[in-house]
Image (cartoon, rainbow, N blue to C red; front, side, top):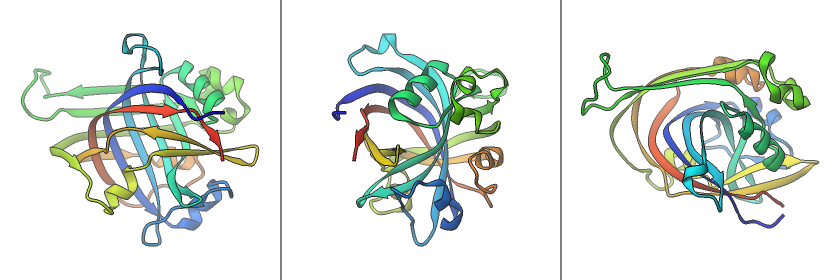
Length: 252
């Protein structure tokens, strides 16, 4: 398949929650065709809850796009020295999104019930302070059409993810070669299908990140992916918004 723009979307109110892990715990979950990309001897696994707006085919206007919520669990890989991400799971509130992503990209998407709230204060009246975001994701295959249609979906157990987060300060670009840069500035996603590696390029402006107060509960999401529950608090960052173009996958 030729490499051309396929999907446009806007990503907003996103939390990056990163945990370092022993590479021996992550390596069995990554296909042999891909190399694990470690930093100072540690592998990293990240959970990213976000709101997606105006997701649509590249040639369509924003007005026909779909809005939904999602959380992805990913690790960091390389292919032939080119860094990217490998998704361990992606949960979304869009059943159509599950079917499209599985068929076109071969990504491990699951249908989930996801609640997202953005509150400015306890009374609900807007102030100049940053809002608190509350995000709860429940994957349950009991009522999941995608699980009935896909054997790979049926193999994944139910999972829960929850986070409450509030940004602090002004967003800015990550310092070159910093850990934030390593964990966020990734412009390729990789999948392995039929033993062959495939890559889809992801185009967006460099991430604008800021500090964030966050409480994250991801044990169930990690365990459903075959990982031990994360140890300790994650490194957390917030990003307000980014526009994406996801290109078609290409066999390497």
